[in-house]
Length: 214
Image (cartoon, rainbow, N blue to C red; front, side, top):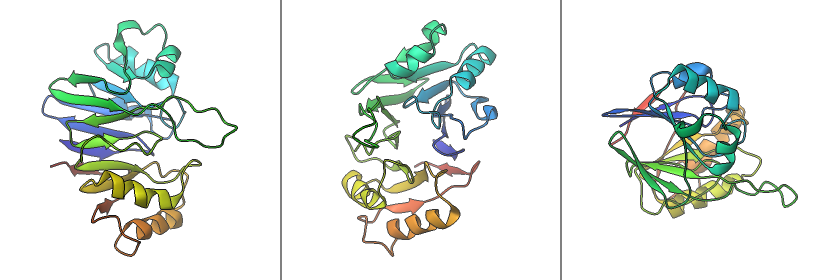
């Protein structure tokens, strides 16, 4: 498996029989959907999902499949059988790549802001994308895609999340709201200079950079 980081929370996972794209939102250009067999969408916020982009991708590639929660699926009405609604505890297969679904709700931003559904995807038992939540995967994973900056997130929570999830490595995503200096501060907190994350290796990837997943 090979992971490629795109803008913000968008990543592509390539495997032996195809490629999957997770959360192509407003920080990712339309070109990121080229050559993928399926789209996985964690929730409806525009930095993870834009209706126009997904509809255009499905029109351009009739074989493209979309897996997401019910709230996103409602916005894609008319695409029909190309959209499959999934939720916590579900499992499906993408051309030989097993995928399981975990989590139900977006992290709280403020008590006065209603929470929306959010699901995370575990691919091949190795890479977990939590969307906008700090969902701990059911089993220890090799690679955790780690949301770095968001209105709902405190930096200290990331340390505890890595201690709880215990992946081999964490790859930063969801960083568009942070300056370069802010990302560096988070990196120090999550690296050897910080309070300790149980030996988890913390990594960052530039847009378009790839990483082989063991």
